[in-house]
Each structure stands twice: as structure tokens, then as C-alpha cells.
Amino acid sequence: MAADGGDAHRVAAALVVLVAVAGVAVVSAQVPPPPVTTALLQQVAGSLQMYVDPLPQMAKIRGYGFQQGRVVPVNLTVGMFQKKWKFHRDLPETPVFVYGQCADSATFPGPTIVARHDVPLSVTWENHLPDSHILPWDPTVPTAIPKNGGVPTVVHLHGSAHPPQDDGSAFAWFTAGFRETGPAWTQATYRYPNVQPPGNLWYHDHALGLTRANLLAGLLGAYVIEKPEIDVPMDLPCDDDDLHIVVADRSFNVDGSLYMNSTGVAPSVHPQWQPEYFGEAVTVNGKAWPFLTVHRRRYRFRILNASNARYFNVSLSNGMPFHVVGSDASYLAGTVTVSSLLISPAEIFDVVVDFSVSPTAEVEMLNSAPYPFPNGTAPGPLTGKVMKFVITPNGPLDPPDNSTVPDREVPYANVASLGPTSETRYIVMYEYQTPSGQPTHLYINGLRLEDPVTETPRSGTTELWHVINLTGDNHPLHIHLGMFQAFKMQQLVDLQAFTDCMTQLNDAVKCGVDQHAVGPVVPVPDHEKTWKNVVKVPPGFVTTVVVAFKLVDTNQPYPFDATAEPGYVYHCHILDHEDNAMIRPLKLLPSLKRFAGSNELMMIDEQ
Image (cartoon, rainbow, N blue to C red):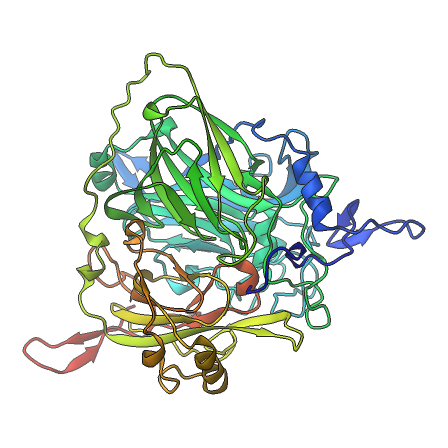
């Protein structure tokens, strides 16, 4: 939010440090619980020695099979379980919610699912969670609240092109054993066509009003779509030299349990909701400040920021660069070399780091992003560090490092590759406050999720969206189904006058957006010039994006009915914003096709 992040990150008092059951403190009536303050959370995090736990690697599940030498579809079953997880050598095990094929193998994050391009994968998602949540939640924000207990969940495959019924609608939630289901629930098994270009995706919970708590508890995992005819010729590092780095900030109580605030920033409005969650420790693959032993060779790191709200601006302590080969679910047109990477929540960068040229035997991954981003507090000695790489002494490489950093990658990354756009829209981000300035909720275009749909693109088209950010935060905008690419970011002038007009009229054209969007233009970074699933939208700017509602690598329509119910959504991926309620529906209309030699159009039935 626009306020300074240094005010204890808006942490209010009174979460018990001892034992929390279903988000309700259990204490002796005679002994008042010690208040949970930022200082106490920092003390717990600061007591943890950095770089003592090796970086874990999540198990990989192959999302396809082989039959007589051919690649064939398979069916997987993945469950959600409560189990104990140890975030650091010196912390006791603590309850988490995690994905896995069984409780014993479930991990934080969940297993990495490796799919094959154009080979559909069916996944049955099973909820084995208890009757009560392990973290607090707020019933005053739009929330899935079952009548008979249980933790509502639903899985969204972030970045995937799939039919609406497989999208993981916030209203398609279900509790353990499908005892209760949400109004949009229709099926236990989701089918992912995997028809899009190769790239990095991730799966995570998407239950209405509970996304921030369910992800904080651990319901997330990586997903990769491979396409050997594109991947293999690049000769990127592979096998043991190809690793996921899933970064997520967390705070811990003195008993090692995950901390989430139990009191809101404006408790008379929302008893528990706060506008952003910022943890005092940085976890990578489920461990606080781990280390990774590497050889003097090239490594491929698929870096995912799975934090609720924290941005990371990562760099390497000895000045070595990142060679960026992809962002989100797409390769770049060509490798871009950078000294640092600004990674928003839900954003992924695919990079190569060449440790053969390291001038040092140890390298720290550092973070310099303020929180809230971009105008908040600079990270301190705890959140300013992410992990460490320990380089083994020189010696013969076994096997030899034959990997490369490719100059050219894919031709479809260029924003001009899909031709002209068919529609222009204005998307406006608002924040609302109490008279004393405490945030109460956030909307897109001044509307709630349950208000009638206003964004109705035609399947098979591209659109131009002008995203206007009238808040003090940078927002990571995520669109379900579609892929998009920013190509212009222009600062608004006379921002207060424009904001006042928009607050009254909620109409960018009537408020003269063209007369206000005349400030400096900030170039889109070269390493973000590809088809993405998350675009960073800076405050006080108009960010213009091209949105593709079709397959970007072939310029072809989806091979499924994208117009079906329950539709899709787009939203801010700061989870605390998404839950309250910076999220709107997206409903695709049927494609139009022009008759040969005629100006007449006909509607195409996509079923």
C-alpha cells in the first residue's frame, strides 16, 4: 500500500506466540499472551543462522507416459495434506498445508510437475485438509465459508491455456472429500491441454478470500511445459544443473509455527485483513536462507517469487550477471544479460548463471527491493539476503559442461508477431481508505468480483489494455488464460486532479487520460519483452499492454471452448489485494471469421 512499510508492516497486537489452533489463540486465562510485534518476529528470524541448510529440490512428477516409443497422456492424483515441515535447522517442525501424491511425499513447495507440449494431462486434485485452518482468515472479505467446516481449496494452473472449467475458479472450491463444494464446482479432475509454448508455470490455491492464507500455509508448486524440438537445440544446462528456486518470505513465531496477523489494519472494518503480508525471513524451496553447492560450470535457475506481497530485486554479491533466457511461460527472442532482476509476486525468470567465471568461492544472492514496492522500507540484514552458493574447488568436470547461453531463442516473443489489436480497454486500479487513511479494500474499475462482467474479449483476438494505477503500490497484474506483454509505461501528470476526477466519474476518457498521460516514458526492460503471465504496473503510470487471447506461438485460436462457464478472471497477484478484492471476471465471446472475398463476419462455434 502507499503507506510506509516501516510501521510494523501494519502488524497489530495479540497473536499468541505459544500454540495457535485454527487461527485462534489458546492460552491460560491467568497469563496474558505476549504481543507479537515486528521486533519479536525479527528476533526469531534473526536467531536463525544463515546458510546452514542445503537447498532442497522438490520431487519431479512426469506428466506424460511412454507407450511403444510414443509419448502418451497420463492421469495423476495430487492431494493437499496437513503435515509438519521444518523451515530451518534450529526451528521445530510446524504444521503446513502442502501438495503431494501422498502425505509422506508432500513438500513445501509441492512437487514439480513436468508436462510435454501438446500432450494433455489430467490431474485429480484431492483435499485431505483438516476441519480448521492453521492460519487466521477474515470472514468480512468475500470468502468461501463452508457450512460444515473444512478448509476450502481449488487449484489454479498459473500461466496455462485451458478451458474455463479447468481454470480453478475461486467459486469452484471444495472441502475434504468433496463434502462441500462452491457454486462453480463441476469436476474433481482437471484436464490441462499443454498446447501453449514451452515455459515455466506454477500451480497454487485459488479459493475465494483464502488465497493469501492457503499459499502462506504452503499450497503452491512448480509446473514446466517441455517441447524438445525447441528446448534441446538451445543446449541450456539440464538435469542436475537445472534447478527451481522458489522464493517466499515468511515470519515465524517463537515455537517455529508460521505467523500470520490475527488483527487487521482497520479492525472495525476487517477484523483480520491487512493490505500486505511481509515476512521477516526469506525461504527458498521451503528452507530459510539455504545454501547450494555448485561446480564451476553453468547452471539454469528457474526463479519463482511465490511471496504474498514482497517484491525481490535480486543480484549476486560478486557482481556476476544473470543471463535471462525466459520470463514466465515463454522464452525470450534472445538472451538478455542483466546485473539484477526485479521479480514481482507470481513472476518467474528463467536464467543461466556461469559459475566458471566466479571471482569468489562463495556468492550470496541479495535482495534490494523496498517493501511495499516501490516506496516502502529498504530491506534490512535479514530480508536483504536470499541464499548462498558455495563453489567447489577447481577440478575435472564430470560430466563436461557442454551447455551454452543461446544468442537467439524463439521468434514469437516479439509483441508485433500477432498483428493488429481488435479492441482498446482502460483498466483502472483503485484503493479505498477509512477517513483516517487506513486501507479497506481495492477494486479494479471501481467494481467488485461479483459485479457483472465488463471485459468480454473475443476468443482468437488481441486487445490493447491501458492499465491505470491510481494507488501507491506497484501491482503485478495477472490474466487467466491470456498472455500479455507491456510495451509502454508512461507517467501521469497532475495525478491528484486525475485521481479526483476518476474517483468521481470512473471514466478515463471523460477525465482526459490522454492529457494526463504525457509524463516521462519508462522503457520496458528487454528481459521482460516476451509473452508473460504477470506484468508489473507502477504507481502513477499508464502501462499499455497487448493481450493475446489465442496461442502466441502459432497465432491460432485455442483448440477448446474458451467461452464456456464459469469464465476466467484477471487480478492483482499481491494476494492480500486479490482477496479484497482487486479481481474481476473475464468472459470470452466466440471468435468471428470473415468470409473469403467478403466483408461479412460469422460467429464460430468453438465447441
